[in-house]
Length: 426
Image 1 (cartoon, one colour):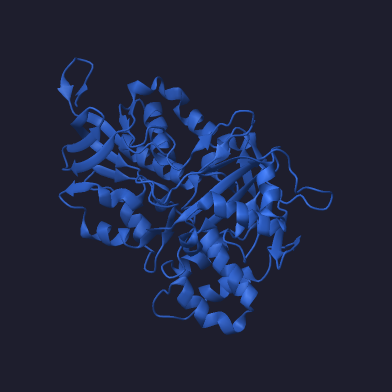
Image 2: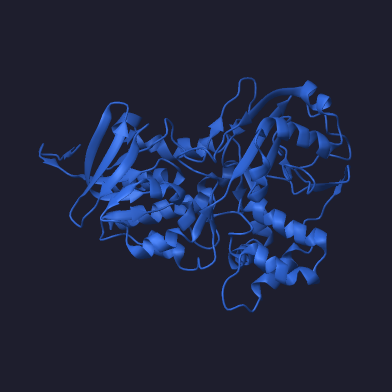
């Protein structure tokens, strides 16, 4: 495929964007504003990437199978915060079949501070670092630190950098950073907002188009793609890769990616996650003294639960990330059993109220291969190295490359997409 300029002369496409998630779509919107021609290719049959909002008949608020929360008040999402509602910070903890209110401002911050002060010549994994400080903290507090690592970061304790986790804890320590919001129309409304100015989809994007190989040089790049009609080569002056770092290895590069980039890729991981959404006829768990936003249960196969507050709608999301996710082989059945145990109810009481259940297997999804990025020891320069373009020919963006602890967030992905697009038009 080539591009026809205004005189009808065939030439290379100015920019090819690989990936239609938040980073790719924000880059597309920025290029469009600058009047620069581009084509976006997306392997899935839909746009949004790990934003996956699914409307359900009879329910006003969509089911989120991917991203759900806005964390803090990020500048990249400032334009949509007016349509967002803050999630009440009301957490409970289940232990021994008993539910009680839980102030999450426990000793977690102290543990993370201790990890950040460890005087070790090399960065440690989280499990190594916790072993060094275990004499200073109670078992429940250490368990809380592990849960925050595997749950919030969807990371493996034996792989994730303790320094990175400590730094993330310091970044999220302010009251504003701790705030969470939901978009009124679901995260899918953000996708709609990004693509609205771009015109008919067929004019700027191709879905169900998988990038197999990229042959790059300073002058132009040839991208081999596969779609329902077969194999096609797309020639572009510049390529912006926004697909998750976890799938970069599935793309062949000629010449190979520079050694520094390949080493940096090894410093990032993408952990497993299972999130199951259960919709009910009514909020049977609510009463005058119990209307939680979040529930933690260290004894459960799914350690974290949340409701739909502040919006109406009887639902629970059951979440399990990192190492504990390896023990989930029947997500919906196990989620129902785990929620029953957490609420102190019989499984029958849950299933009698259940209307529908929803789950997307991100771990087996070939275009994500997990949740979102976390950092391994030695990560400090990895994101900068990965974000650095190659010969003004191949550019990179995505949540894994976000700065200031915003990896793993939609706003982090959007910011990197905007920055890459601005370089492409400069």
